[in-house]
Image 1 (cartoon, rainbow, N blue to C red):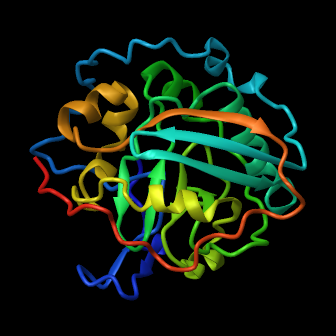
Image 2: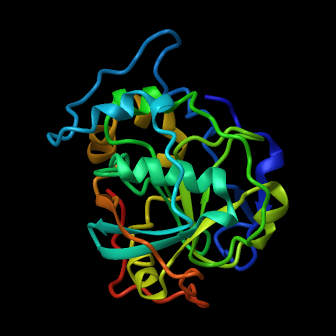
Length: 265
């Protein structure tokens, strides 16, 4: 996996732990030598979740359906449910990709592998290694940025221009600084649902699961369950009907967690 250039570094105003953090990206920094597998070798693949995946996901070129002008997706997670509303006009290429991924249950059982308080929640690496392998080169052209990365908005992560595949992030605050970098939002979480998103486990730090995307891709959810067992995950993501003309209004301020976080294992 390619190491992110400084182009994707952004200021983190109000983030007391550090002055800056990397923008949401598909290509992580390489893990430390002590924990990285040797060149030319593959880590042993752990057991995949028992639930079977849609075999159509192995052929990304077939998943080209045009999304409705508006649609909604219900996410059932380990913390509760939230609803995403998508207006295709905001980012049609990204909306079509998201629609096809949800339609074929790509996100089912996937973990929220990067949760940075006051910044983003990132997901979109499949729980199943064969599915991840199939989508690694299924890149999309960029959409023009017509909406801002405000709190609650969903946007595809990138590794540079025209490299979007399946990874998505939810903005936990107003991240309008990402707009100029080409991050084009395509949907928004309803305000009530953001109370659920705010509860996702966030105590592993920004540089832990995020730096091991290559291993997550190769081994799937089994790798995350073994090494970061407290991460929250998606039970199912399901299309359930058309939305109104305008997306649901996102929450305007972060909500406090309902319980104190525990230390990572």
